[in-house]
Image (cartoon, rainbow, N blue to C red; front, side, top):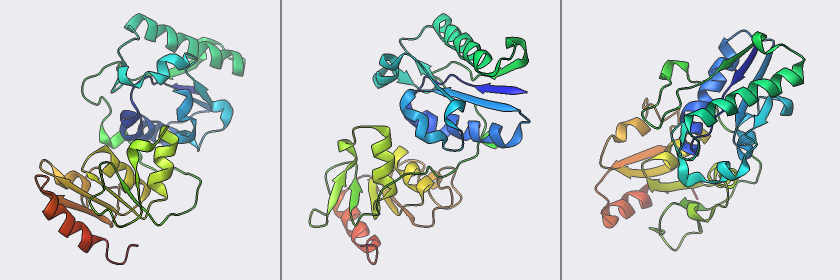
Length: 240
């Protein structure tokens, strides 16, 4: 059976926390002869378990670059009819590549929605994203540095999703308000210090976004900088 998953036109966070893990689950659990994925052209590096021919980028790069219009699995500038056309084009391209009739190709799509995640956690396999680069002795912040005397870099300076993953993967520590960057650091097994008012447990040990990272310190705090700085100073002992 030839399996096609996608196309995915949504945002990067949803791709990391839902679509990519779902693709990995399908890849490991569904019987297939050939397996293809379609997503944004810049997301090729996320599917390092696939050969180049198995990844088919969405041809409209302008829409992929319009990140402000991407919401969950949805793209605000792609009507549902247009999305269906993207799906048909994906299937047609695989048919030509493989010399297979379209009727013999199974497209596994996801609800085209900007609402809640349509993929249940039981059908997600989270795997570390392979990146290149040398381990650095810096703290990666997503806001202004809380401890300015120590070498730091800012997440906001990343020019692409690939750069973001590389900076996180090579940091000595990531410091951010609990959220997507916390989950990314956990996925990559990087020490991370975060603070949260709501639902901090999801990033801690056995939380859905901890991914087995034993070096995640999630502080329950309303954002008071003096409290965060004292806790962070203690957390950094032996890490730099």
